[in-house]
Image (cartoon, rainbow, N blue to C red; front, side):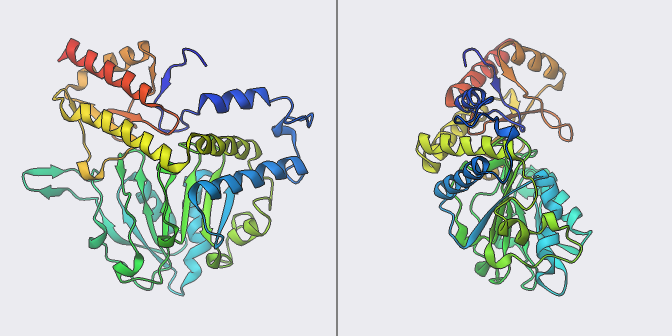
Amino acid sequence: MANRPWNFSAGPSALPDSVLEQAAAEMLDWHGSGMSVMEMSHRGPEFTQICDEAEADLRTLLNIPETFAVLFMQGGATAENAIVPLNLMGRTDTLSADFVVSGIWSKKSIDEAQRYGTGRLAASSLESLQEGDQTWAPLNWMPAAHTWQVNPGAAYLHVCSNETIGGVEFAEWPNMADLGAPEVPLVVDASSHFLSRPIDFSKVGMVFAGAQKNAGPAGVTIVIVRRDLLGLALPQCPSAFDYANVAREQSKFNTPPTYSIYIAGLIFKWVLELGGIAAIEQRNIDKAQALYGYFDQSSFYRLPVRPTDRSRMNVPFFLQNDVLNEAFLDGAKQHGLMQLKGHKSVGGMRASIYNAIPLKGVQALIEYLKSFERSHG
C-alpha cells in the first residue's frame, strides 16, 4: 500500500501490508466458499482448515514439540494472567506460585494470582539498582536469573520476558534446574516479543502471548502449554478457560475469535515466506541496532533502560527537555510517523518496532530524530 505512515504503536500494532491486502481481497469470499471468514461456522470444514493450518504453521515456525498443546484463546494476556493460576496454581497443595517482577505487566500478574492463591516474589526490580556511578530507576532493569530465589515447591514460576511499557527484555531464559527448582514449570508471558526470536521449549512449561504485537490483531491469545500441565485446573475455573477442555476440542470448545485466528494464520505464512524466525530475528536485530546506535551517540534524547536489558521491540526514550514533547509528536505526525507517545504511566516517547516495521521505517524515524535535534538542540 503506497504512502502509508509508519505506525509505531505498542499494540494493537502495525500489520504487514500484504496480509491486510490478502484479507481485503478475501473479505467477501474466502477461497470460493461464498462466505467471509467472519460468517463461517467455527466447526465447519472451512474454518477448521484455517485453524489447523494456523497451528501447523506456528509449530513449524517455532519448532514446537508435540509434547506441547497450541491453544487459541480469548481475553488477551491480561485475562491470561487470571487463567494461568486458575489452571496451574493447583499443581501443588500449597496453592503458591513464584513471580519475577520486572515491570508493570509482571506486577499485574502477581496481583491477579493473589486472587487464587499466594503469589511470592522470586526476584524484583521494584527498587533502584546501583552499578558503579550509574543508578537505574525501578523497573528499568531486569534481575539476573542467578539472583532469583525460587521456591522448589512452587506451582510455577512466572516471568514477563518483554515488558512492553518499560522496554525491558529478558531473552536468555534459564534452565529451572540451574535455579534449584527442576520440577517447577517456567511460565512466560512473551506477548510483545512473540514471533520475533526463537523459543527453547526445553526450558519452559508454558508460553503465552496476546497476538496484537507481532502475531495478529487483538482478540486472540496464543497459549503453548506442555501437555502434562493439562487437567490441573482449580474447581472454580470456568470450563471455557480450562486448558484441558480447550486442547481436547482443538481451540473450539466454545466459539473462538475466528477472524483474529485467520489473520494470525496469514501472518504466520508471511513470516515463513520471509525465511522463518531466523530471518525475522536478524531483521529485528538490524532495526534495534540502528535505532539504539543513534540514541547512544545523542545527548538530546535519553534512554531509561539499562543497556543489557533493552528490548528489541519496544524502545522508550525521553527528550531532555519535556517542554518539547508536543512539538516532537506534532512534527512526527507530519512526517508520517505515528503513535510515538509513551505509555501514560511513564510518559516520554516509545517506538515499538515490531516485525511488521521494516528497516526503512526505522531509518525514517532516525532521520526525523536527527532533524528535530538539529532544530531544537
